[in-house]
Length: 99
Image (tube, helix red, strand yellow):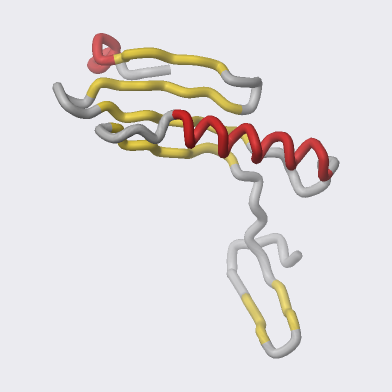
């Protein structure tokens, strides 16, 4: 969904998969903005499925990384914020799951 103020600036929109979509917006005469919206797989997904997703994301990003375009990748990366201890290193974040 796009704010109606910029609806006339939309160059194209394309659904790559149910997890990756691309929106191109005209910024000015020389420059466009590419927004790649993603919904990443969780860490519990099969490795092969995750590899296919990230390969397609890289392919999509590369395809839209032309000169004169700003590429923004955003969405739900399904990351977890928490606490982790690995040897001497300890990482603590107060708003995580503690995992």
